[in-house]
Image 1 (spheres, helix red, strand yellow):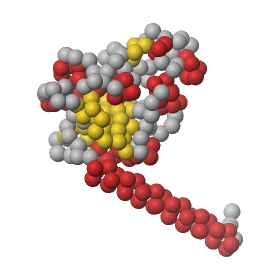
Image 2 (cartoon, one colour; image 1 turned 120 degrees about the vertical axis):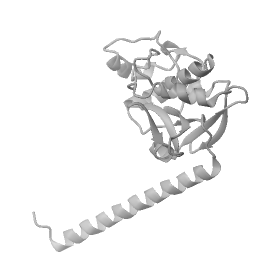
Image 3 (tube, rainbow, N blue to C red; image 1 turned 30 degrees about the horizontal axis):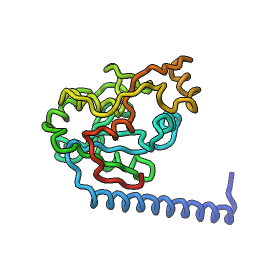
Image 4 (cartoon, helix red, strand yellow; image 1 turned 135 degrees about the vertical axis):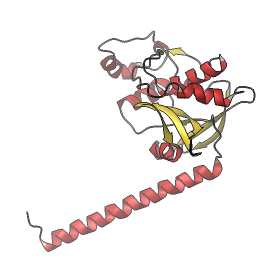
Length: 218
């Protein structure tokens, strides 16, 4: 269909507004990213938490645990010396740190660092995490090794490296599951596994071995 000149002009103005808005938003994100990187000097082994974009699973994780933390990972050095985050999302893999930060809602991030004496061998911790690379993501939050979710990865990496747990393992039935019952039953084929044990991102963040270091927009 042919657009008349006035309509074309309107579309051009609309496209220009969209382009300027997108550019401004991207510039804002880059500025936010620069602020984060100027105030936090990453160390290998730092544990980072964020809120992912809204969705059924993300809203359930945050709602069940009564926390803004729906995702977490561990900062590691890549072979090229760049900072990355090893995480379980889709599967267990490493993501460039800047891309990981940009993914979070509002570029929100909370950084925790292991307290003195809690992490005596960072290399062993990172090696333990990397042994899970390639495992699929576990949307059902089970504690077996067949599939791995984000806070489970950090929990098991620390356990494998130190022989000790980090954070409190809880049963679903003790958490705020009721508002999310239909979603949980849908994932579980109609079942409601209230006795399922899990380590939520919030519970991991409350581990006595971790100390809050830096927080931005979260």
